[in-house]
Length: 302
Image 1 (tube, one colour):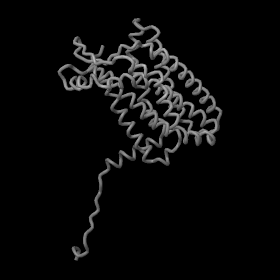
Image 2 (cartoon, helix red, strand yellow):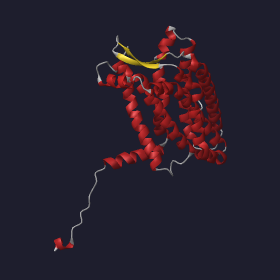
Image 3 (cartoon, rainbow, N blue to C red):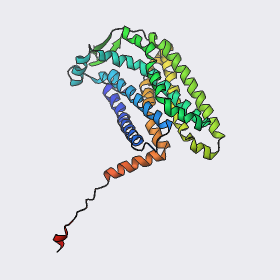
Image 4 (cartoon, rainbow, N blue to C red):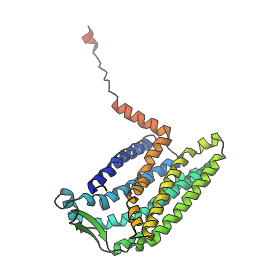
């Protein structure tokens, strides 16, 4: 069993490289906008930003308090914000972003399917209206998750472990009674959509496959698999709450959550040779020594 500090180091060991790769892919997509102009990359930017929001909220809500001791600087920081609205935001977004992530993952799967079916029809629609879909996905879950704000949220000091925890008196079913069915429904949709996409791809000609960017289906399928794992673990956690199996499986949920948040840039680099080439060029140019030319006046040559 790892200590809180050791577990935090494990989180950082893959979190820092993933964040760096996210930033590199964001920069490349913005820098070479004409090359990466498809609706998939537009969705990737939205999805990535929301994933990072989820990832960092998990740190502020759970992981940093878990290593903050009473006498350290981090503990002092949390005590200073313990009675502010920030506690409410951390707790609210902890539940809220579950809706957002699962809905966006399903949206990306639908994007791939529709573009494969009729590229000329659906690609312009995605290009024009993706931001509206993302806005709705982010805002609509507040209908349910705002219930979090009806309860007191406080910073609790745990003397036995000399750490802190952000807690709420809210019964877990107040959110999960809606959230779990939502996760299950959208995961089923994602699985069905990706199965249909793979079936269609297997029957397409090579030239059509390239045009429809069907290689990105691999990304959506793997992300969907992570989504399926997260849904299964969350369902077991709530359905069999308090049982040894549920407690054991709950320890894997942070890693599944991180997988859903951080796997996309790794998959993009593995799948897209163009992204790899652009990142390699960027790094190579930065490491390449600059050769300065010196202009010698003609008079010095005489």
